[in-house]
Length: 432
Ligand SMILES: [Zn+2]
Image (cartoon, rainbow, N blue to C red; front, side):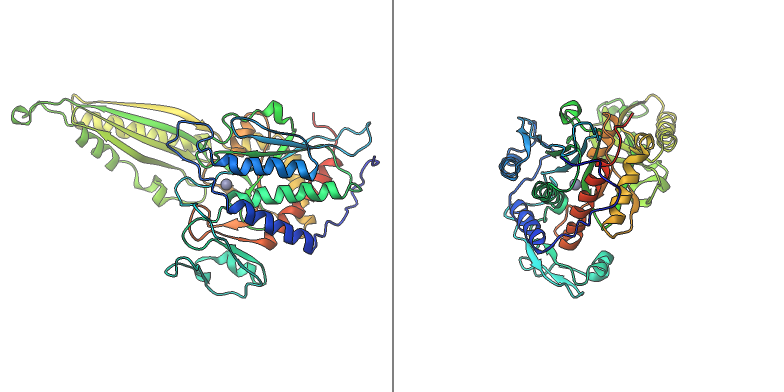
């Protein structure tokens, strides 16, 4: 058993062995098709996600983790027990990543391409010579000269989102088991399904996971920590018109299709996804369906603050009233439902969670970059379930597309960051 760890850092310098094993793990996981589905009625949305989950279950057991358990919903949890002396109670920290890949892009027989010692310039994708990853369009490539770069072959995504995170966490755990001299508290590991369909935390049991704080390894470039997300709501607008035989329609018909088109045309153009960036808010119509008598339009509403969200919802309510007065006799109903909230509201209550992550990144030799996500993540939902969970870089980028790529060097830095983070949490007192 180890004494109270001191804040003097062990140096987690990872060598050729870790580098090779991290690469092999990542390639092994990337080749397994784990595409999720937005239209499926089952959970997880596709059974192929179990192909990877079962392999991971076996590998975690082989490494020597305890309580390795995969449930029928596709949540795989495991424990690395504390090696501190019994009277030291450090908070339990958790690491998470998702095994599924984006539902909208082909992931059948992923053939990774490994480019060692990348010297700059455009990267040709061997399975699709028309497609290349141009350095000019990828400013991050400029930071990766000399790195090992991994891409797909141009016919599929790569799946670094989020198999980079999975491979990093397994490598971290393997290293910690092989280095019992490094003191740490209890660590929980979780691999989850269906992040890409937005349902990744639906059956995530926070009590069973039983950590005081967690980190998803699901971000991009070296040093990145994401602690802010949008607040999101959905809105359904139902337009009721009046259908009458067109031959007898004069002064009587109210065409809900025209009302719907009018309403969408009146939305403020400066608050749409295609006209906004950074912390700007928007309202976005994404499905429309119906006929003369009735039309339904689905919207999402997004903003970093609840005030911004309300402002966009008020825009929508105003155009609904406007449409009613422009088409007398029509009825326009707006139903707004809460989807998720900015995780920052929760994370601000636990400054330690981000402070330790920043310290770990610095100790790994990188500069922390705080950033925000114009979307939601599993971490934002977990924050509101009581588990503070920011997102840490995993070393890949161009997620969801055929030009996705990852830097093995950044992935190795993510492993190093996780080792420092584990050590730092071992020095902390139990949280209030
Ligand atoms: Zn992801």
